[in-house]
Image (cartoon, rainbow, N blue to C red; front, side):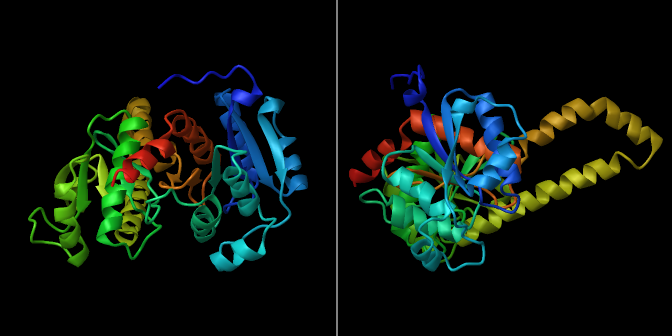
Length: 343
């Protein structure tokens, strides 16, 4: 692929950030946008939301003014609102206004820490699915001993069918090869054992279909305990299982960090040891911090939609914005379209 040049504003990647989405909006969302434009001159970030609130937050920072714009939106979709009703009734919400920019081709990506349901519904209804894609999945990167793996699906399709999981495997392979640079990524399906006769009805139905796929590197089943070891690059499952894995991953990581910190404070000796190992420990723990990997792209749409945690702080917002750069440069949407259309 020919490298994209960024000579002027028209060449930059245009990303809309839902400034009103999430538990810490607009304070952390605006701060995340500022951090992102300071780190990369390849992007222009449009903050969708209530103009007066956004301006108040932006006034706190020094940043390249030409890289951040305000996209006024007078309404906010709250977490507890019914997603379909909210998308239809709140036409001037930060989510709808932002997604419409992507739909019209006026933005390359949309990022939100807001209502997951509204983002999922809006992605399918407003941005739209690629032809041939049955169900767009959410696909976050998760840390492993060997780097990262892609967990697909983690929250979009609880009642998935076997054909959906096959498409997840194909889309995940495209993402890991093009964005993460992993040649011929290993694909595995989450199961309760390595034997083919194990698993629920969905896994048993999907297994032979994945084995027949010639355009993916399917290696069979993977048990949950082997995911952190990096035994597969693409972890395929339906959304219920994927969400449980993701939340447990985050919870265990947070618990271990607290336990390690507490252990280092138990005695004078441990405190001295803690000071000595602090740089190495900090670097290691950073690798297992899920916020370092940005949000979960919703694969299979006509444009890029990224959903990040509702509790996201500025760093995770920043990383969610920056991950849109390589997605756009590598034309992941186009590659998924080509992969699915050959079916």
